[in-house]
Image (cartoon, rainbow, N blue to C red; front, side, top):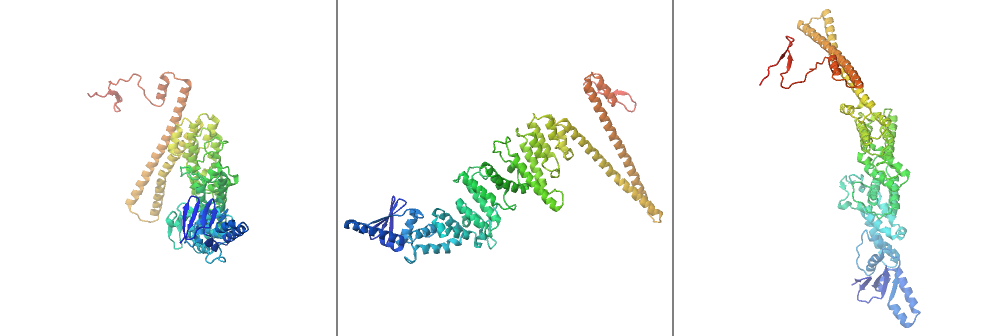
Length: 604
């Protein structure tokens, strides 16, 4: 029976025979017997034999002592002292439990100690190889754990081909049905069609995947690209690994992530992720914005940022306002948000829309374009309060959105109003230029009412709003009149046709003829009323214009007492009582029948 006992920095093998071998591994001494170790390890057999031969040339006392006790130092032993302890237990016949985490270190230890079948049957190398092939490499989770354990065993593990075998197992056809297809739902679909969710006990291997080092991760990604895996699956792996190793990539995680990777490693990982993104529109937009912010902070290459901006631009209709609010990390930008970046993203989106419209032979008026128009208007309202935003940059971003992307200009008006309120020092010419972006014909009634009373707008802009509002009113009245006249024309035409049919010999009931005549007469009366209403509207417009001229003349001449106002009242038929009104005096009314004024009796 073999028992290993432990004291600090020592391991003792307790058997019926005394220990005669001390093996030092990582400053840890193992007190063992020579014969079991030499029977399993060709290397230890050779070292012990060589040491005994060297001691035989010494004095008799030293030779006997050397044969009794041997001391070996195994430098750079694969797996360290823990792995050597398991290998020593195997030499003494103790049963050891092979797992996916210790099989690779034991396989390397067996190679280091030369524990082959040629030296002893059922040795450590054959045992570990059998377990590795039949158990570990048939499971994705176990293959990833074994791959992770081989990282600290380089270059011996690489020489034995263990990482390559684990990677091939991970990306093999047998493991395809176990890979996630989307990052948002983490959904898996097996061969039977059953769905599972990553995070359950049987799918916890996905967390192990993110613990791989960057060199091993790069090898795995290269192997995935060379296999039949879908690009979306590779992208999912990239996203999860990046979220684990790049702190601050996601806004949803308010706590600062601690990463053992250096800034150079994070930048290298970022470029690897960006260069391997799927060309299709499958990446989460929020994740892309996280990559873009990180690329700016880590000073990534312009090519990387262009790739991200183009990919975001192709999915701009899925973006939210919170995503577009990219902070300005450069000291060269005076604004709070990176407006130039948003302008480039918008340009990429519009370019793709134009290309699609050119292929289809139509004007770019897709629903995506309408959504982007609303998004940019909301973004303009958000950044308009920035005191450092120049008028030209604000104006350029407003006009960069095509007209067909905006059904109404209420959003533009809101942004302009916020900008003028936050920038009262803007010159008159700049204010007028900014207000030129407003299409008054696309303003709703509420927006027109607010604009007509807005003191921040230039006078020219207010006049334009009032003019188009009056034009719309005239068109509305004209449309109402035309709609009323149309039934009358239809009735007259029907009556004429009815009369012609009667003249041709058709017999009709006299009651029907009277009904048609009454309908025609009523329509004629309605037309006369409409003509009277039209003339009255024109008369009111002329009187309103005349009143405006008189008021402007009074404003220029200044107050001249009450005479001017009395003259204005007489001109437009208004009567003013010259004396002071007495609240206790009964009101005066005019008797229309007699034409004389009389007092209404006062009721107590």
